[in-house]
Image (cartoon, rainbow, N blue to C red; front, side, top):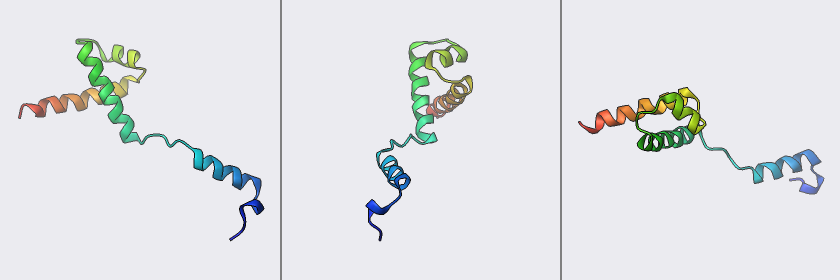
Length: 80
């Protein structure tokens, strides 16, 4: 094994970057987080449109629509 001091500078920089990198959350974590944000928003903003929710939460209309669909499925299954 070679000594780190002998490694090219770009390899040392890459190793330092990888060691200190903050990994972004997975797509599933982000979707779950957004769903909770949408749930909380609709609890305090009854009757608002998806467009208003998207604007106020900084999400796309599609992200809000996806979360609303999941929430409706949860609510539908809650009564069974």
